[in-house]
Length: 319
Image 1 (tube, one colour):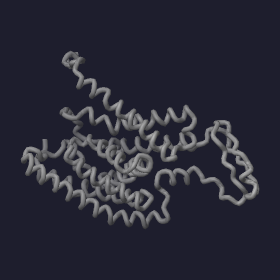
Image 2: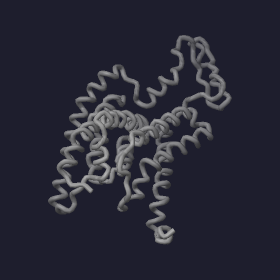
Image 3: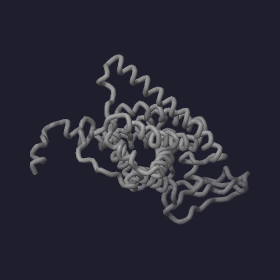
Image 4: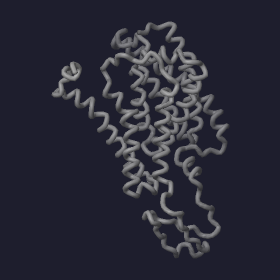
């Protein structure tokens, strides 16, 4: 009760912290929908109002919880952090990403009505047929004889989210090399920014403590840290590069990716995160699938969790 009395409800900063992330999430999901429609990538199921509304709520909730909520905590010192991170907590965010992307896809492409009725005609007569509409009001395509059958739901999922590739193993092998290069580039960018800040602002601008979450991660078993790296590589790339990038572009997806990492409690590290995201975005645009970025991201995180974090813990002060 004493804590409630200490809150100034008239403080505008308090209201911004409370409602700002939600408004930003609403704006982001509206922008995502508008850009997706503009690029003609809007799934047919989202033409149905109730499906579209559910997709807004699903993606907007994720934006709010995982991307914009950390903005409301900037400048605040979080007390009483847990002394130990449990295994399931490490994968909770990745599970939410999978749920968001999977739910959006099913709302956009899964058929909840009776099976699709397709009109079939000889190839020469196909143009004369008018598309009909199914019970949901979604147009039914005309498929002349000799055309390939409609892709399965799994094939559509792979195509929509950048998982389709001629050779997944070859793409991941390329990503292994690119991951090492991306780590070197990101490290170089961090060192350059640190040098510039030191010269312009002084030593006080540089971080002097390891974030409190680092000792917890460093204490995890090696296998668990490796699994976290692989999980982050796949699910974060699936969401930010497979789902967001084709619809919002590299720059906007990078901004959201960086904001999603504010919860680490060390804004200086966002330099490396941003550089990494731009590199991964360029790789996906070049290869037209996310598998090289998945492996490159996993390699980057594995180096951080297995090498850099233990080194920082041994050589830098922490609370």
